[in-house]
Length: 519
Image (cartoon, rainbow, N blue to C red; front, side):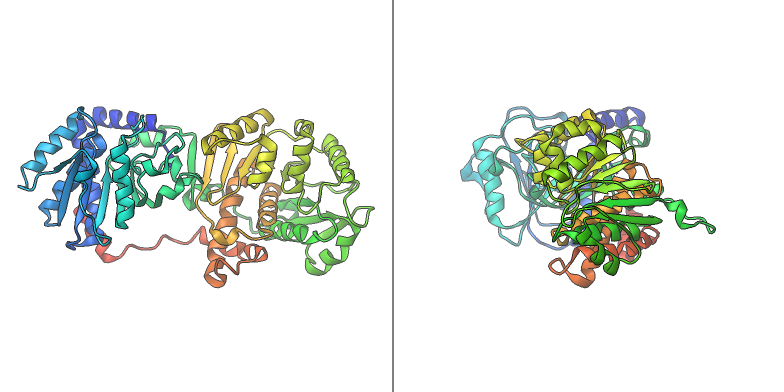
């Protein structure tokens, strides 16, 4: 799914109005009507008090359209106008007149704290105060209103974006943003729904189709893409009946040190489980017996040292190499890494202490194979590579600059893992808190390396690998829960993650079907 920028959304609105020969008021009617349809499908006429707070711009106009439809359908509606400026948008004024024509209970004008209505925890608040066009700090009394929303403990539904949240800037005052339980976003979700510092302002979200121009939606290139099943499925490489293991590549996993051989085992197992034809593990001598006994499918090469990697010499042809899991940062290991990079041309996936070794000697970054290297840092490892950041937007800008400078894919691990290549961001939608466990990053490293070995390019392998990693965990928690999900289970469930790619979508219930026919 494309994630459109604020500017692109405005352009889409403009083109829709021109090409479909409708007015901006008509487009607003569509938007408000779709919110009504969404609510009506779920409420079915329930007489829960609904408090709709409308700004005086187009977001407020959407709220007025919604209020009118709810009133006409017999819902218990209270409508308020947030009088924060003397300026009103044209379409707001049109819909302000329209709502006055359907009810004697006109919208209440709010302009100070004394005006705030009482809201019961069982009520519903609809936040239609500010949309994506907010470009200034909000007034103090409006901020107090938002605090009033939160303290009421009522369910909050935001229109397009939680008011006070900027689509392209960080939050500087958490009390100046609505904390929504659900957000109904037009055309596409917003980037801020997926960033650590701003995702908390909406618990859930959904995208409403308001009939924007199809040519615009299909042909407009975006710098951000949301990755789900439909996005990864076209990249899947099916297997021929007469295929053999030599056709699916050879992954070499280099890592491990005394007490950390498990990391290599996890990475090697996941490379096999994701479909690599052959996997060889390169470890210190202390890892030989553990690997040969716990993972008989993998081959093993050992370093001359008992406890750490001190030199990297092998006579196999690897189609991908995973480096760094459990390897440590000993000086001898760092020197071995440097010598290895000088002669290596195979695609690389670098994780854990491999990243820390790069951070300690950033000249090594120049030796990474261009366009075929994938770096998979967790937040602290990322900070060592790119330096500290002031906010999530600053972090993304620094990662994009780093990716462009070194021509590498960077996988920013987190609740919504983001794969970055140049200016492009690919936001993953699978995964859950069960992945916050030792070894899950080692599994991801092996998955990506295993996909590269099969012929997936580095960026696709990162995007697809992150998706499968998260999907495996999503399936596994049905059996193990968040708390009991071990990293090895993720590899065990990769097969089910692959099978899930080809499951047909669930059929909507009859009630939903009936509703869709009337829209």
